[in-house]
Amino acid sequence: MVEQTQHLILLIKRLNLKLAISREISFFLMCSVIQGYTYRMKKSFAFSHGAVCILGKGHFMQDYMDVECLSLKMEQFLQQQGGDFELKLLPSLIRDYKEIEKKYELATKFTSSEPFKTLELFLAILPEYFAVLGFYNTLWRYLDVSKKELSPLLLEKVSRERNLVASLYPKIDQTISVSSLEIGKQNNFDGDLLTFLSYYEMVEYVKSKNISQDMLAELSQRREHYFYLLVEDGSEYILSDKKQIDLIKNACFPEPETEGIMQLQGQGSYPGKVKGKVLLIFDVDLNHLPSDFILVANSTHPKDIQLIQKCSAMVIDEGGILSHATIISRELKKPCIVGTKIATKVFKDGDVVEVDANTGIIRKISK
Image 1 (cartoon, rainbow, N blue to C red):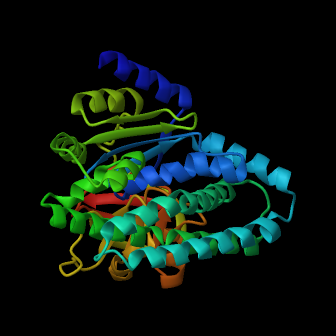
Image 2 (image 1 turned 120 degrees about the horizontal axis):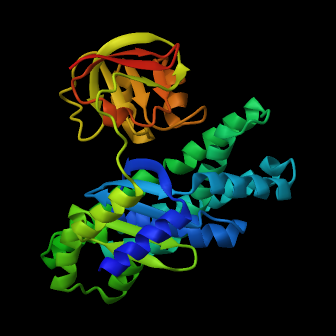
């Protein structure tokens, strides 16, 4: 165990993996994402994320990758494509997405009646889908940080298409959850545990339709805490031992020091200045929201629209000029600051803060 832990620590450092995004998503679906981001992207575009690592608990995870290297790969790819890649490549990607969407709709017809069939159909389309989404996300990140003069029309096109493609994955996650719970109900076990199978484990389970008590115990432990790493060369690592995971986390991904921080700087994406109480996005009850709350989140997604509509301002760890939070804040005319990196670590539920999106500064007033 010690040797494996040390090997993984050295491997992660060599791969230069850094925190890229945090989100609510099932373990199984994130493993499927990584399949698309590595093997399938490599096959389709001759470059990929190379390696992706995730750390999680329950259905919340943090995603680590080498974003800088990925942006360089995207730049090289675009140079090879020539200046009019948006006229040649993007339409074909949208056509691919539309075909995937049709396959998704077919798969959902069996969610309750034949849940194994739904999962089987998903296993066939998920890597293909996430390769398309992975390309858009990589292009989106690259354009967001590019210092070149970029056409506003191109930025708007990429952002719109990326959000269209991304809108499918929460639906897929929900369908997987429903199918898994139905299988568990039919076979007298906690179906939610199936969402903690890896992509390859799910392939084997759908084939055999049998799962051992030992595996269910492993999945139960994995639900409490997990580590997953997939490298493009085929190396795959899954850990559920908390001691091992903590050693890796402390050595490779230490938490930022936030004690005593009263002010953060980000990038204002829609102007305005407001005061209010912090509301973190996790486990929010839409029926019992405080008035004039400031929404603080790692990132936002289309599924968060009801919450966003009711907040007075947003403060987001991630994002830039093409992020969902930026776009929706402009549409709804709500003050918003993105790219704070650690707002969700600095501010707690109930903190009174002042959000000045004109300057990009968030200041804690009191608890």
